[in-house]
Amino acid sequence: MTADAAPAPIFVRSDFMVFGICAVAVGLAAVTRYTGVSSVLAFVVAGAAVAALASLVGRSVEQLGDRFGAGATGVLQGALGNLPELFIGFFALKAGLVSVVRSAIIGSILSNILLVLGLSFVAGGLRHGTQRFNSERARTTMVLMVLATGALVLPSLAAYVHTPAEPHEKSLSIFVAVILLVVFALSLPASLKRNASAAGDVHMEPPRWPVWVAVGLLAVASGCAALVSDWFVYALEPAIDALGISQAFAGLVIVAIAGNAIENVIGIKLAYKNQADYALSVIINSPLQIALVLAPALVLLSLFTATTLTLVFAPMLIMAVAVTVIAVAFIVFDGESTWLEGATLVALYAIIASVFWWG
Image 1 (cartoon, helix red, strand yellow):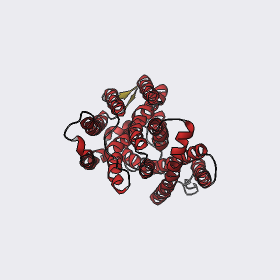
Image 2 (cartoon, one colour):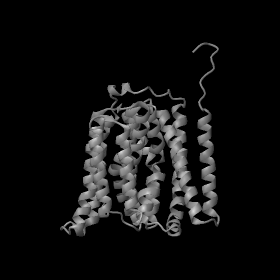
Image 3 (cartoon, rainbow, N blue to C red):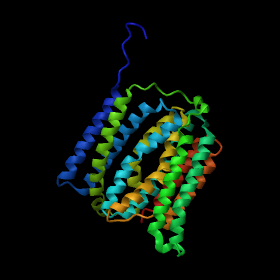
Image 4 (cartoon, one colour):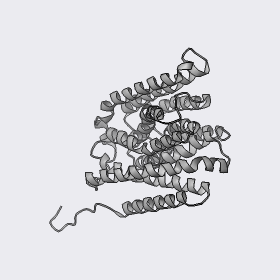
């Protein structure tokens, strides 16, 4: 930098737009929560506020991400990006909405690895043609997803075929939850490791925010997300009744998409910029952490509520997630993606969502 060059600004116009949208969204959510407006309006406004706060979390993580590499960025993005879902799930359990929570867990996995991953493949493929990413990391992640899917399938199967484990559904779920958390901890060193092949991506913009600013905004956004999530769940059940939709569809689609707003925006944007490794890492790490961390954490947290959550899911939910993981594994194992592969993933998501429209 020359002596007369102006220092780079910490915040740019888009940052201020995000700050303003978050402030307005949270303010409107507070107004709709504590006034006599319709439950549907309160639900929509609170959902929009959750999505806006998720965008702020995502922007903060972006400012930290280039310091750590694609793998660590994906882990950090997934962990912090799933905070709104954790809050929503916990408050929903306190409200007794177990079916919504179960559907939202599966829906979050499906919306990430079908809808968001599919849209990112479409956006990147239409602009850049075939995109390539770190196939080794993708294979490792999908192997962990297969394990996590097995952990969701087996307790459910044990209940539905009436094995001797059926009466011990709660104990089995707690045991499986602890194992999944241990597996996630063991997977962290490999996930956090930088990989030289990621250098083939277009280099991300240098971070503008100091670490303390990014961390501070993360803390503020997370605190607000916890508050708004409580309002979101408060309006959820009345809104479901007013709209005439099933709890399964609400959890599988509406709650899942609202809680995954970060990955919806960040992953597609990264793929559009031809940063395929970062995009895949951000998108795939979120459903992996939902299966390995969020679901087990909610099982354990439910012990402190009046409603116990177990890992026994409806057969259709189990079939949907099993088909999804198999389909995505076939697509990402070769380390390449095309827009047509993305379109097929989006189509599969639409088909699954339509199946659950009636419950």
